[in-house]
View 1: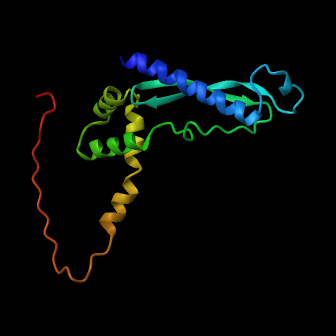
View 2: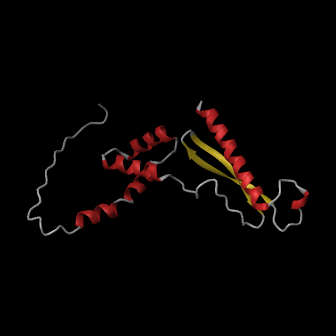
View 3: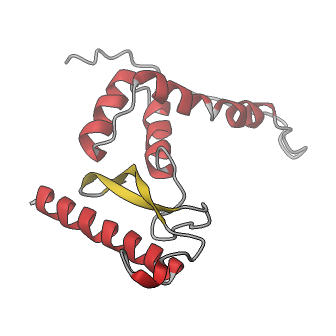
Length: 156
């Protein structure tokens, strides 16, 4: 079922992008009134977009003068913010980078290497360090910290 929805979504997005270029140029493909207008269609480039039904590949059309900017799809991001926040939460819970990469691929269909997971989680280090170094209010005369450490084996 997801394959059918993904194919239909891909076709719909491609049609929307083509219609957007037609509206921008002011004439249909192969129309005579488009000849010698100073700007014309100039092929397309392919872009992978992650959706809730899995990744789709869309053809983003171009114009000869490079003036066309589509508004159907958001600006290109290699990964979504939702995935990155999920990665950071899993990493903070002690899940290994390899396990996170496997989980993200199973959940969202997006492949992250363990190195990418590590780089995303490193983005949080400055915020964590700033939090640890912040000044405490004068109303605190003592800070009491308590923790419990339980070593666990992941294979069990």
